[in-house]
Amino acid sequence: MTPVRVMLVEDSLVVRELLRYIVSRDPRLELVAAVASGEEALGALQTVRPDVISMDIRLPGIDGLETTRRIMAEQPTPIVVIADSVEDSSLRISMNALRAGALSVVEKPVATTHAGYEAVAGEICTQLRIMAQVPVIRRRPIGAEWAGRNSLAAFSGSFAAPADLAGQAPSLLAIAASTGGPPALARVIGALPKTFPLPVLVVQHMGAAFMEGFANWLDSVVALPVSLAQDGERAEPGRVYVAPGDRHLEIGSGRVLRVVDTEPVSGQRPAATVLFRSLARQAGAAGIGVLLTGMGEDGAVGLADMHRAGAQTVAEHESTAVVYGMPAAAVRLGAARTILPLDRIGDHVLRLADPGARP
Image (tube, rainbow, N blue to C red; front, side):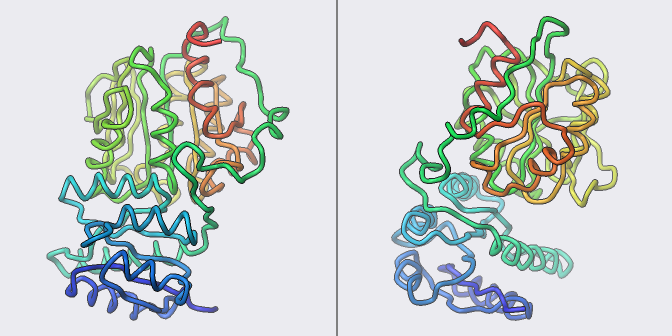
């Protein structure tokens, strides 16, 4: 196999050399450039033409966020953000970099123990290899990210209309995502008003070190209050509860949240299937499940359980999914009653939860 061509963008000489060493150890990766600034990265892009970019966020001059924006506008290339997991400002910029087109965020290799360093190094190489295979698109100004793909109108005939909710009223909403998930979640949850009548439970695949920063970032960009889920707390209407790092999130009886460390499911913890299955058990037909962009198949089986329980189930359409893995698996299983592009999911969920809210 041809090695994946990697460009490193990192201003710290120590970290840059460490990343160079990590990449060089993996025979499936080939380091083609290592630069110290956004300006150097943009200048080298045309010549080097990497398959994937490792991007530092805190850069002198043009920072990593702006560098990401320019790369995605000028020469779209898969980008993996390498971030400091303990600095809130870095995390906020990292989340915005995902919104600008970066695919994932991983921790800088500065763990204090050998085992911790090896785990982080392995994750960096894995993310670089996997994300190099993701097709990325040229990003236009905010609000037009998906212009240039197939017209959404062309798919209108394939969408299911909202089901008749004359029976049991919805009581819980669960949303799950992986690769490309943070901006997709911000779009869907951001379409829900402060008066949204249901608790919202979220699973996002992301390194444990970043989950608190992700929850804080999401809280800053949507109207509903967002926090990490706490074991034993009661899920309240109009609040968003994010599964914490390396823990499954379930809903128990009486809307009590359960945060557990049982075995990973399909290699994931938290796993979307665990959350969706708990809604199937506890909410039945009163549940709403939404599966967004993501690599792999997590969530598909759980969404199928919700479908069989009579719940409303939604999968993101291929036309807008950054990675059409998880929603595609749900569609193959027949688990999605409704298949919609990202921009339509929020309004659809709002109509399901509160039929009188919008026409």
